[in-house]
Amino acid sequence: MGDRVFTEVSVAGAPPTLFCIDPQAGDPVAAWYLDHDWIDEPVQRAFLGLIAPGMRVIDLGSHLGTFSLPAAALGAAVLAVDADRAHVELLRAAAERNGFEQIQVHHRAISDSDTAVSFVERSIHGHVHPASSSEPPPGAVAVEPATVDVLVEQAGWDAVDVIKMDIEGMETVALRGMARLHARGWRPAMVFECNGSMLPAAGSSICELRERVVELGYELLMIDHLRPGTLVHAGAGAIQPECVCDYLAMPAGASDLASPWRIAEPFTREETITRLLDGAAGEGAGYRAYAASLLRHGPDWLRRAGAVRAALDALALDREAVVRSACARNSAPWPAVEHADEAEPASGPRPPDLRVWAEGLAVSEPPTGLERAPGDERAPPGAPVLEHVSLHLRRGQLVALLGDRPESTSALLAALAGIRRPSAGELACDGRAVLLARIGDGLEPALSVADNVALFGCFLGADARLASGTATRVAQLVGLHDRLDARLDSLETGETALLALAVAMELAEPELLLVDRLPRLPAGGARDWLNASVARLRARGGAIVQAVWEAEELIGPPDRAVWIEDHTIVASGHSASVIDARRRESLGLAGVARR
Image (cartoon, rainbow, N blue to C red; front, side, top):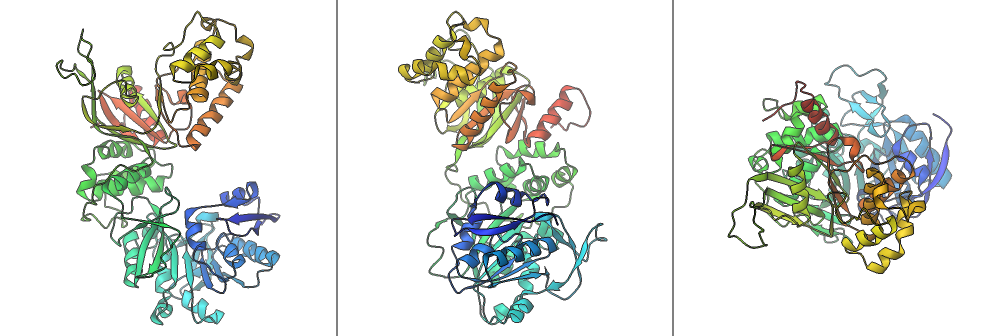
């Protein structure tokens, strides 16, 4: 272990406590604590909302003490357990520095027996190596096992009030090891992780874990990380739309059920599908594999959703073999997938955090030689430029559109902006949309940079006086403050594009920014402004759809890539995998699955 550092952190609004950190450990949570004096996640709020002075609390998988230390600060006695010796030493040092004599820290691997345990130390991803599996990997260490029942009895406790479990798939085993506690009639509130990747590795599953909790007399509430302050009713066999979810389990019929929280009904069909599709596009290969398995082998109603086919096509092209395997038609489904017959949830409104919702969208060319007014059905539409397009976009996300025909991606952007009317399907967009199509639109080459800021700002709906008064500041952002009087046509095309982006970002304040193909943007300080500006837009709930030919043209890191070819979506999902697959296709390389 390297040199220890103590840093003060407030967890979910609880009184600040000192954490002991090893800066050399490569632990992302430790790095956060060193850079911030706070952490606030919904699961932490749920746990600490249960704590009161005098309670007895068990923290299984205690790590650095994110749950143990604030619980002790709130007056609880804590029994903390972790299988990683380094974590145990750091937490013991923090408890001593804070003067928390009521924290007992044990170096144990939670089990349901006294069978020896091999533990793989991987910082926050450390996990028990199943005895029934292959030989332990190099570096695995032997850790003394312990059941919760034994630890409670050794502590001299006759009851427990709250249990937190985050032990990388061993949660079902932990429940079996607290049988005597439950047999005595105690039903402590529980906050636990349900990990669709790690539970199968430990010989269990998400359904088995949740069924066991319900059988013990608990009501299940999923802690919604996308809607802080919301708990969602969840059945033992319900589709878990994300690979890893946190749950609050309360004794059935408890009258004081997390009163500060909003209790929501189970996920609708739309919420379930959009969250699964988000997981299918996520960065974690295990998360994508979980989504792939559910979409391929789960209930039939999932595959009837318009966007699922394109997601499955993207998963079949994934750069990771574990994802492609989970997506294969003839592959055995993961043990996590036990609800192939689960009933279709009730349909409901679109999730409220969506900026874009498109289902079965089609856009056609305008009739030749005819101007068609909105609502005028007399003239038939021309040939389709887009068909069967289904996608969604959440607040804060950026989607990359990769198309073989510029008219297709341009038509989609125009439809999202409300300029082109869809010829079929459903489309809903939330928030103020700003479309940057051709760079020349709204700009006048013969006018100066300053005049164009004012003119383009008004074109995008900004107040005229505001647009004129901020010309110097806007030009300065992109390195053009010394060229305010220069004619626009004296600029490079990349500089003109940056100026248009600056006006749109700073004056139009878009909630949905739609960007067609941009020329190559100049490097330097102006790109630094663009990166920061895009990050701010996304942080405040704005979303971006950008049509590009190559990934290098993107103005920010994408959450999803959508590959459009032959007027429809070929694949939609994990950005790097879709971009790589399209590049292989464009180079004529083998290995690109096409339907």
